[in-house]
Length: 634
Image (tube, rainbow, N blue to C red):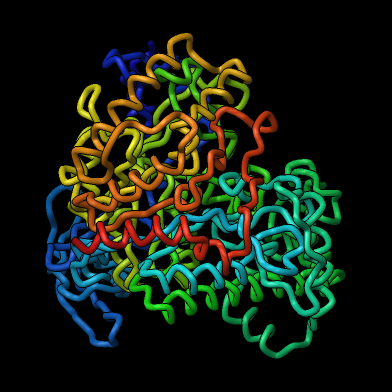
């Protein structure tokens, strides 16, 4: 391979080699390196408008020595002289105070984000108690008159009930904005925007829509009636809406314009719109927005009402005694044809999607079809979109789960038109991003959970731990060879859980429901049934060893008994927080999502069997949660 190409790629943060699950190294092809280099564009020699620094440590940045002036966030002023480090950079004296401080040096203004050493931790939020919470897919909740879709009013009901039974938190699926004009696109992990909210979750006005009692959400059928019901209460001249639009400014207006244009163009991808409408700054976009001012205002109204619903749900959680309350979820990326990619063209990756390299399960690699921020775009734009995403997520939540948290360090990117095997790792400014996460966590007094399952960069677990981000410890993966690890040996600084939305429920795993699905779809290996039977014995042995179960192993059909034992088992974990998926609280056999499928499995559609305000009152469910609560308290 051309050495200059390798040097160019490595200088741009593109890994020219990668290591697979067997420890073997592979060289990235020249065609991939060229495509990724072309997609990320030229480097920018001008420093960004925001730099990060550690509280109490010297501030080193690009620039020339000379006098400087810093206005701290509290209004106090510091002046001094920047020292020359001898390598084209300068050094400023440390700042002890966390916050966003404004530096003026040689007539150039730069924001210095001075950050704490750690996030707001679970131990701080709960005063060192071992606590528990639930995880719920928001769309699956029910309440009377919900029109066939769980919403933030149902979440409010669930929060009250869970808090009454001793829960400290409720983790929810992402509520990122999807596409109002395309309700058939409903995956929460392929949103239009990670900064704005899914308006279909806004609590409905009175009178509510008719009850819909189906087992699955029919997204295409429920979306338009919900929006129509909300539109009937919309007043474009409401002064509260005017204030809301003024407070949220240009990012909200651009998103509202995107939704309006998306509908006007028949929900087509913005890349196929007339060229004069593909830039949010185009005069023709402003003209069309003025011509459709009520539609733009309506989409701003939807954000206002949805945010109000989130605030009410978090208030209900806190009123019910939850020390943390809602834990929101940030997806790893967004749809390339969505709002974020249109609204923030200089901040996002274009012509690249993200995924994963080949591994034991997916030998052809994965392409998730979503994009994300550009490393160079982040720096050039002062991390504006990243900060807005964090702040929007934490505004009405006591915590956040960062999906595929390894993306703070690197992501597997796949050039347009290439196979997932032809990707490469693209590195991100980890130090800066971790610092900003820590700072926003502290300012919002919100915990941070990183989804750290899978292949991690060397030393990454330690970086997360040092920064106060809690990892995830999932029952199925906590093993020493063929035996399941004792819960008292799980990581104290992580979150324990029985399962996740991408994995089998406890009852489903015990019954082999996931194996049935895999067999039906041609995804099952020949010896999985034998391995599962062996693992059932190992799991029950682990339950008995932890004091979570007694007696003989239950029959395959008795998933409820195993769900009882699993709740107690993860309750005994050394982890500061245990989260029980609501499917396991109810001993349900079906999982929310089956990776590797789209329409073959009813992903992101299953509804729960009872209204949110009654789900946890069923005697077997209440007993299971009481067992978990007791395990956490002893």
